Length: 418
Image (cartoon, rainbow, N blue to C red; front, side):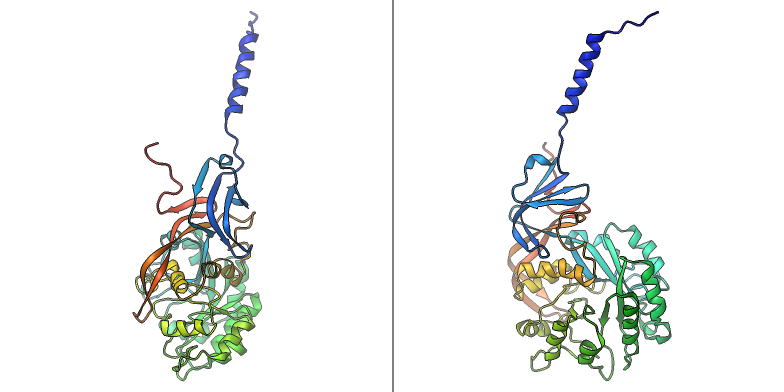
């Protein structure tokens, strides 16, 4: 039996399908952030611009991108649109091993609970893991975090276990440390020395040897020696341009402070910064004092990078979070552009990750939207001393790889009434 084809019906069906396809919206972008002041130090931007995202990438930063070009619009009027913040000094090798301080133990913190709500999209664990336990750190933390987690490998093979473990010269192997770093390029971004208390340059020489072998920077937490080792020798003779001196504004036992008892900044400190030594804040629970920071800033020593030294011993003290530390420097006289640069493009350069820290088209869409509050605020240093201020940064929204991962006041959300 021949099947009868109803040609008019087929024609009408095809027309209906065509019109249905044509009626579907075709968007150029996935998301547009409009009306915010874009601060991007790499590209020298500090003006009201729109930003468009497509396929998890930044694809346009320009004036007046059409609001009809994306299904989702975020209005950032009166706010600041910045690259996702980078914290280059944190402790995130969280685990359950007792008495191991910051190496797979309870004092370190899982990243995602402390990053996105503060605008951080990239965080660097400094020294929690050494070559012996880096794989555990990678499997346990790096691979399981939405935050981009990088590492400065400890020169001590057992990592930052504290106490006698960090005094063991026999476990400071520059060859094996550099070898493991080469196995994880772009994840291990440098080397760390901390907490050595002997009057001995050997640990410094070994971490720098690892840095030379792997062509990576080192970060030094200097101090604890009695008598004190020369800070001038460390900065001008031992460290190389691009190496990082953390806890810059600290006044701790066993380390010469950068500002002497008469309030004078050592001339060698500015000379070291001019040489290319990166001055990092590394606030922590005991490493930031106003009596050091105020005169140092007045005499020209601004930080290259602003970091937290996040761990359970600092998060509830004077440090609190990255935005609190940035706000301190804002109230100490740095401009908003300077404090944002310190935690974006300058931080990216310090860890040699040049694809981070800017809003260049083609970059992964790691973005934070900040609000600058005006009022009466108090800021506390690690000695429990207070400074009053009138400005405070707050994170409104964070995007990681183009996806909203934190939204304080629902900027990216529709009203429930709709």
